[in-house]
Image 1 (cartoon, rainbow, N blue to C red):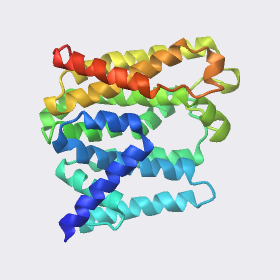
Image 2 (cartoon, rainbow, N blue to C red; image 1 turned 120 degrees about the horizontal axis):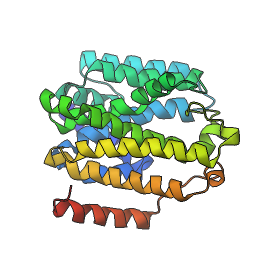
Image 3 (cartoon, rainbow, N blue to C red; image 1 turned 60 degrees about the vertical axis):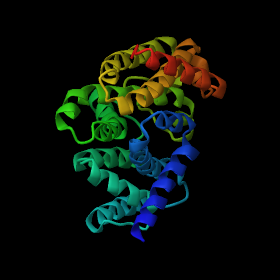
Length: 279
């Protein structure tokens, strides 16, 4: 039965999420059960594409991402893919009317990682972040508002700012790996070989402004989504605080993390704040 295959497909997307990101998985668990599978399917799609361009060394990455894209559109046309990640994602795209411009923007940024190593202008930087992160937030927002286009337009700006904040925190956290392993520099005007405290402070101030605006959207989210998104927001704010307290030279030489113990504490804090209707 096709329904059984679809169930298995969504379970595969959930497994991908749990395997690649304990933090995101924790946040998804805080969402209403009715929308979790859709968010898992979005994460599975974007994670596989990201892994192709970042991790599949020794393979023809250009062909792999091209095949991945073609198989997605074939699934959209036929209503099925034997790739369970794409099969679950195409269901979510159709159910929540996720527009193709979001998917194309995402795939464009993924393909840029195959040919570009730096983003020297603000425009290039913002376009990459829009495609790699902002549109993922917008895909999730489509699910959160359950097709309510008026609500979607109301929260669109805040959702993109939250996506930007998350991505910039990731860039700052992964400074060492991006620079030394992947040979990439996403921050315009920043020489990673002479990264200093002033550059760090400037980047953090930019992220904090994104978070400030994003929070205004979180408090307006539907009840089914608010706690989960707030949990992710709290986690990334904590990670940013750790980066802020870390000397610039350590950021470039190590990967800053939030411990599982701290994550558990943040979850408890988020739950209390949510239950007291402070968010």
